Image (cartoon, rainbow, N blue to C red; front, side, top):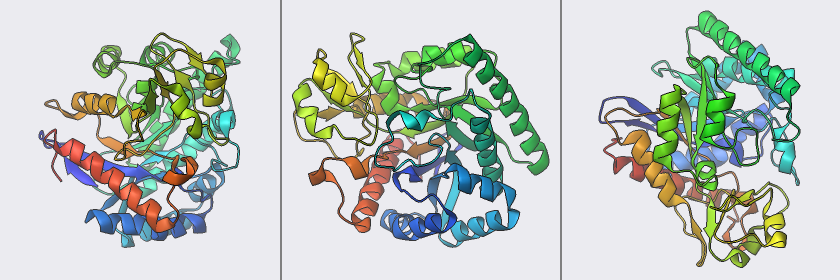
Length: 375
């Protein structure tokens, strides 16, 4: 959706399609009709923003085939969809029965991650609306934390330099600016904003910055105002914000029905206790309260005694979009876990999922309007 900050700066709000399993061209088109078209109708929006997730094979196909890319652009246009951001975190197979730590591979120590990300940037340059100031691609926070050594850090640094050079070449060839945001996540080399400042020091900040996922920020028990102040002081731009909420509970036993086999649900306490998955946290009996890396629908409170980190989202949004100038212009609702919610909470049909995603977008739009954003 196209929104406008009180300063006059255009803001883009959409939802991330990594909630859907399609990994080929025909499947992507089918998911537009099954989900995006009814979402747009439910919201009464002239244009619906999509944060497309393209698995590596289809990204390579589109980057190498201008005719195919133009076809995708037409399919989006005729349905009233626009794309200013791509999710480049999962490489492929994001809806396999078991994903867990596989989502972090290949990482930024490998040329495969670099090639994938540049393919996405080439695709996005061809999909950007004519009046969009720039595009963004989100990516993983370098790698999972183990193993990590000097040689791996050096390889990642080289690939980031090559990434910045590749993005500059794309801009020179197409006239379109695409930036890449590294997304801090629990358990990774870059989990916190402080680690982002450390590990991205010396990066080309005209083209590289952060994708700030608000559930991840909450799981790290970071204060949004302090985190954003540190990023500003370091000169690290926020190129994309993922509007997401994590589970929180002072009664960990109530979280048991959320333990599931597909995704990793890192668990953190304010005292710094950490577990790499919810099952592990339950077995170890970490002291309460917990925040769990489990993206839950923004608009729907879980059953008590569970709560969510929506208060952190609201505080962060106030910092990001409530000032005289916005700190970011790309906002993406990213609740990819609808299919693994406890059975009683899962949508039974495509129409049910579309309705849930529309409700999340409406929630996000309302929160932004409370800050004076229009549209």
